[in-house]
Image 1 (cartoon, rainbow, N blue to C red):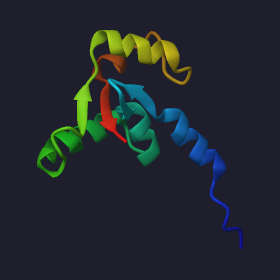
Image 2: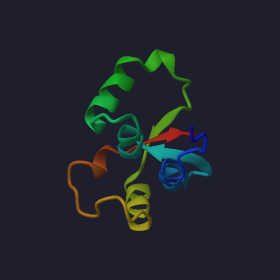
Image 3: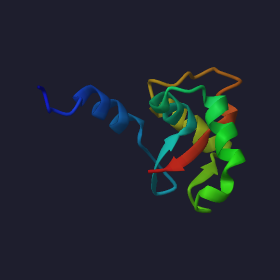
Image 4: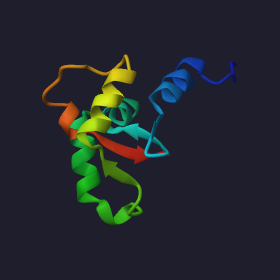
Length: 92
């Protein structure tokens, strides 16, 4: 039996962790992919269960932060009018 960690998964997760406002975060799109759910559903569930999360667990990215994240992350679309405005940072 192979007990080695799945390095591909670790690499994908590590690539998804960004530094925003001096905090390590994952954006909603990457977190949704990790859980295998649509981003819209992840955000809906978080909003429905806000009381379960610490106040500093997430924040909305500013337009400037969104532009910087998209410019620096090759796995994110650079011209998506729907997904990019909804970006939420979740603390890691």
